[in-house]
Image (cartoon, rainbow over all chains, first blue to last red; front, side, top):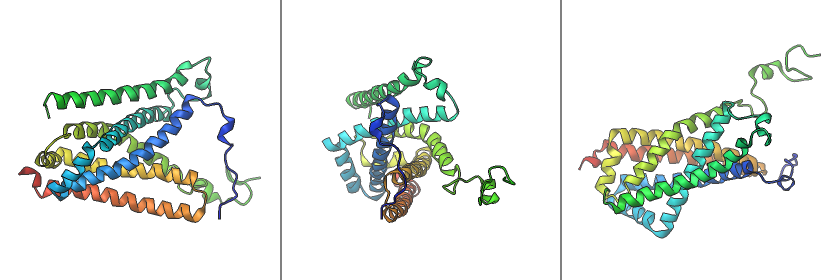
Length: 140
Length: 137
């Protein structure tokens, strides 16, 4: 039986601002990273099992769908990390509160959100370039 | 009026004194989420570099890497924090979006079983590679 308790106002009444993208992305990346933990568990169990089991895991990781998943997991992790860092900063009261939200007084409060999204993308590309260069350089 | 601060009507003074609020658990969830998050900041950055280094690695190299004591210990702590933090987050998602009580309770129990299963599986996998010495071949 669905309960009849009141729910929050419908999202359609709000104008979209960056903090809503941050909140939505934080939750979606968190959800996606939870699927990633299952993948990591597969990897560790495979490593503990046998060479063949590890081969199956490594084979899937190296396939095109595996590579797309790894790329998305790296970005999800970095976004969740950067945005989580902002959460922790605000938890200790930094750049937080009604006065800070006032755009005329503190544009940094809002642009910080876009900076987090941009930094997470730049870091993801940087990590990927590093991995590609490392493999191409034969260091592995 | 009230005999105790925060007391009104039929509210039990003990409930006010405990300060646990409507959830019955106070700030425990909030704190655990933050503490596991702080632990995961260095651990997850380290993990990205670990798996990056193991890309295209052969099976014995992977085993040797996991079996390095520092790697094994960090992997175990990472596994526990990861599943704990993930379970805390999924718990809130279920609380927010699942409004049919019996489905919500079923999912919450399944989530806890799944998180413990995953964490134990990861920890045991790391321990077996580390302690059986497979990695030293």
